[in-house]
Length: 263
Image (cartoon, rainbow, N blue to C red):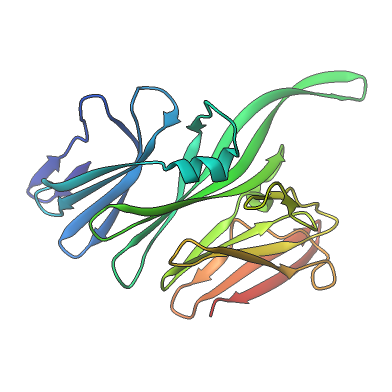
């Protein structure tokens, strides 16, 4: 981390023996600089948990740090009973500070695969962009992880990513996720459901709520009775002051706007 002022600059390196911090996100809170992200016990693209640093915002001196390994329950939520599973390809998406100064940190499982597209008698290489599971964790004001949840989701696109991924919005102790999904989420087990890719001709926007205790609920907000165009679910206009989100729906020259109020 680098802090630049008119008098010069200061730096802080996040390096501990055997621990590799990645995807760090700084959050300014008064005179403190909270930094959250992922860490790995070895230098590769798998993750073992969440890391927290509390810095003095002026000197960048580290006042506290904590490594929070993913729990067995979290691994069960994500992978079921699969053994030797690895958490990787997570990218930071959002952070929300609650009224109690807890931190709600979300990320998405994102990766790119190469494939072939056969059409018009020719074969060409294409990249496919995968936007899969959502990871949400709650750290208390001291940096200890109170819980982590995994929301199973599977999306892939070769085109405009505006219609894939999700939007996260924090309000009070709760976090809301807005996603496009197929008509009915697939029940994978007693505790696990999967939101499958939505289809542009059958727009369905769902909202997933995770409350302060980590309990998850969801409902369908919009279907093709309300909106007949695919919704750019990952790029809304957000008015934090009034808790309003404005989503743009578009196909060709046809356009609609969808307004959502969180309350």
